[in-house]
Length: 376
Image (cartoon, rainbow, N blue to C red; front, side, top):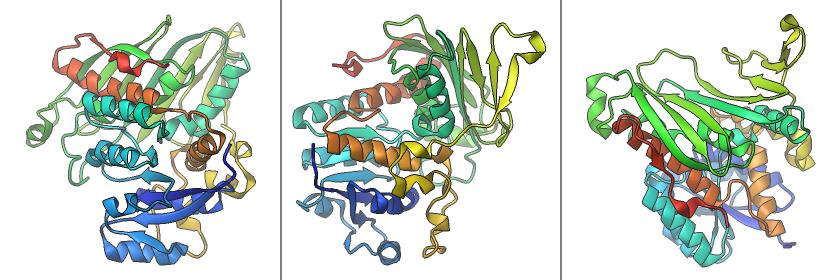
């Protein structure tokens, strides 16, 4: 068990800047360095948060022997390459979702962690959101009873997003709905079947040769009687932004509200029919965190008193998960244990989405997950 604070470097300072003050206040972390190609933005953020070590070149940062761990918040196409570079340079890795864009990249990351003995964690927000933690608490207390089925969705309108987003196959960014259905009971996916539905406008097709407006997948769990249903949409489908997660147990079930901001609905078996459903306001789980970072479950960079100019719409979002993610990563390093999700679990979650889209292109064909994602 390490006593020395973990020197963390953050790469990518858009969404990534949300995590700077959390690391600065975590008792076992030292917010050591930041990295971004845009010098003006790098210096503005470095000055605002008082961070002296600043890099515009990622390779130069990786050569800094004082960096213990990197937290990668760069565009999706860079995740696998930058994670592999960091591991091979002797750095622990936390990386925003998804882990990679191909099954082969996932395989390489699993092998790199096995070869180096270093730690990798995919920073999946939903499995640390307050709603997930609420359902997890009910499950661990036995209040849900035997889990019978799980369901999740992630729907948003991506029109106007730049670079690699236009026409992105829905399941290529599926971790926010795959993560929770596998994460509640710490299961893994064995195989997947997915259908495409509808058609996005033609000018979006050529980016990825993907026409589907919605992709909906069934996931069969490994060594379990459970399966889950997940669905995604990104373009030309009317829906308020929604990351939903629902669980159905023999004793209780928990359903996500249809409209953002409304209470969860808890169904309790064997009550008189009108009394089965109950609206429940989800509690916050800041008490699970070290005291100095608890307030970040309800606030972020945008309301730090000295940094009003660093306004990020993501602030305090994702169900209050950001400080939980930081604490899980840092405490795993300090305690010498595996984080959740670790590299194998992250690969399994990511490959579900990659292979679900492949299944949709093949008319729903069952595709098995690679064996390298087995725990062990």
